[in-house]
Amino acid sequence: MKPLFLAFVAAVVVMLAAAIVRYVPRNYQAHSLIGLLVWVTYGGLLGYGGVIGNTALRPPGLFYLLMPIVLFVMFMARSRAGAAIALSFPAWLLMGAESLRLVVEVFLHQLWIDGQIPKMMTFHGANFDIVIGLSAPVVAWLFASRRISNRTALAWNVLGIAMLANVVSRGVLTTPGPLQLISTEVPNAAIGTFPFTFIPGLMVPLALVLHVLSIRALRNRSATAVPAR
Image (cartoon, rainbow, N blue to C red; front, top):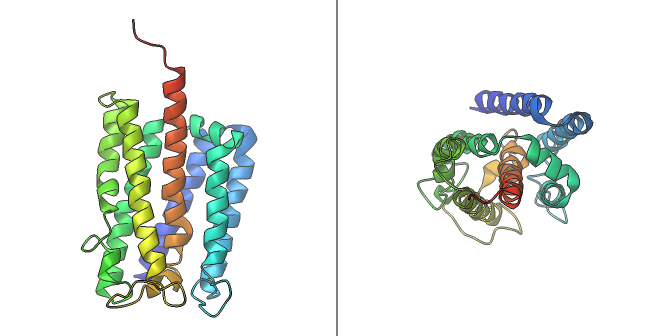
């Protein structure tokens, strides 16, 4: 399954690069592409080198992955660059891209079967993220065809962040080491095993940033909308 997952990661990175070239303003394109390359390399090296799964480090190895993610999400949520990038994409595309989470759920299901993650981390347990993955193309189509309002789209994005927070918190708290505060039938060993380290290292931040950009785009659309007469 590892080669298949690496192929999926590579496809996602290529699609991100293509989207940056297609939509992001020229003055942000080079920085965005370099940032993508640096992050994939950084996260990949942390995973391949066993840093993420190293519970003997203080702080735990997972910290070196999560802290940059938090800072980057805050930057995209508050900065002018984040606003410019959010407005450069069609809002329906940002929401539709969340369908990638469906593929991640399939891999999580297989990892559970292989005994590398607890049932809690899958759609058979307490992970409801598959709802967002399944509904993403539908919500994107409804929004693009103006069948749902900005408010409904915003509510869906907020729900998506809540679903993501649920699975991320459970993933961290079932990880072997000092952070394991939830006892399960098996620990969440996959989070520290390469190449599945790209799930918290790429797929999770991508899903969160897509929601952040969608919300910024939708809020700007609401603020600039001309009231109907």
